[in-house]
Image 1 (cartoon, rainbow, N blue to C red):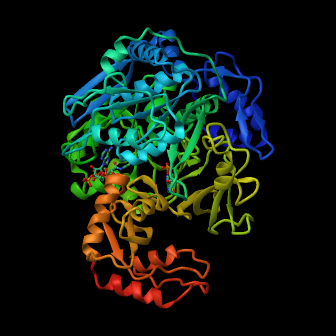
Image 2 (image 1 turned 135 degrees about the vertical axis):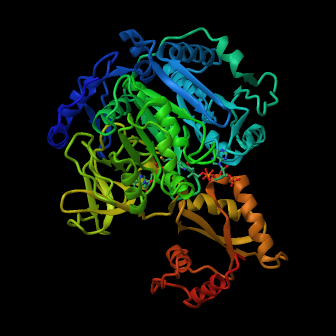
Image 3 (image 1 turned 90 degrees about the horizontal axis):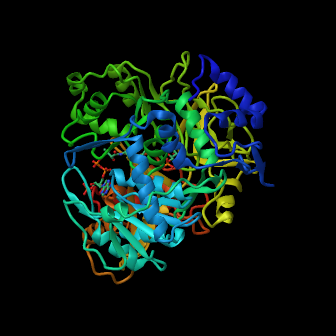
Length: 633
Ligand code: COA
Ligand code: AMP
């Protein structure tokens, strides 16, 4: 794998601006293609790029077989560290290749081939990665659903992706309890209008699942029966996966990722941003259900021949706030990636991070933070305690790799509160409402000029119209990130938060519309609004406001309690919905649009900015009174 000399970054950035096609064809040489591309991209009339259209490759082959073929089969590809079960295991590239090839063989025997979808609903176990890589090997398109989602959310994703097979496990394990998947899977299959014909279940001893003969297969026998298959050469533009993410409505968007652009972007990021190469150890403490898990637990480390760590635990309580330092020291992690919220949780329990002193952290060189805005106190606390580069960087499910970061090469000083500078290929502008670029220091909407670089979404699964409307319509010629912020005089970018109805709860992206759907489904609710309010630990938490139907004979307390239970049941406990208010009316414009910003202002104790279009200004005082009464209901 090619590594760059000091100060390569400015040249790379300039080359990607000025001669993008030549630049990306050169970048593509980082990979061993089945057929190297001769064409960098083709562009749609709207300016959406299909990257490397005549190239052929297979991401699973690049992650696995390529390293075995290069004589590195004995190197460790994957370390599974699970404090919740007490298990640790190492998988070499050779061993992982063998397991993936067999699993792919068994999937093929169930009729899975190029372009077929497979949904993966799993906790943080090695089989989750084996499943992803097995799908990629066949050219099947995986869609991983975060294990914390409730059955209904799984059903929604199954109906959109229409998988032939569901790969799952019998349970997940939280710090203090077992989460049986059986009721969740059963509910999802019952709700889905097009349930998959087959389910393969990793049986875990903590809570085995009852299997339905004919439909369900135990993973061990399934994998063992597989005749190993070779990786299928695919078009670079073939989809590798669909990952559902929250948009502005209740229906999640299926972000599509291709094979070729994705692999090139990830390999480049490992060199330029994460400074991790062959034989080094990389750990992203996220979940396979999120984009960070896709890119930096599964694909990127393996693509470059590094070792990836799969951690089934928490920063605290498994068993203590020294867990991160223990894993870093024990496995020789060089670069570690986590969400700021995880460190806020850790800091609460170990304010001086003294537990780190128990461990040899001399091999730990770089800490990467993303998933939410990093509050300056957390960043400074980490810098002070660790004395290594602590890098806040910004990206989204849609981009798959960082939009902004601090280059790994020497000479790039971080600025507190900034997510660094745009990466090669990203032409970031700060736009005003009219779509005109504003100058340094001025806040606006963060938008990326089209075409986007390799690795970014080419479309929304099955819904090109939604892709256009959600991302391209607002500012012609740009992709709208949904985030607001500004650039300073030096070009450093400061991301201040979402400007749409997406909220970020402990690094988890949620649409308020999705949460509102869950509340609106309750019999007593006539209307509702969910807004995010700032929270010192989780960044944001959702708060609900509900108007009851006439004649509902329940106390407000009882309603709120029922809504909290319903949210856990319909969306999942991770949404952290714990606060709700019953109100007589919601603040709306005369045209009926709910004024969520007024609710947010009131919750955060700011004088509300009330637009002149409000239907009835008295509602603001009514709600302020409910909040002032201090009761949740
Ligand atoms: N399956 C089932 N339940 C889950 C779950 C999962 N995969 N993940 C979380 N939950 C549940 C928890 O058990 C908890 O349930 P409870 O209300 O009954 O106690 C609830 O959801 C809230 O969980 P969580 O937000 O994980 O809180 P926590 O206190 O257990 O952990 C953090 C706090 C900060 C450690 C955790 O939120 C975290 O790691 N966040 C980072 C997320 C991330 O990596 N994002 C990607 C960007 S890098
Ligand atoms: P997701 O698609 O789940 O990765 O969430 C992406 C969203 O998380 C972005 O649109 C931002 O709102 C937020 N985000 C991610 N990283 C950062 C960061 N470093 N600083 C500020 N916000 C971030």
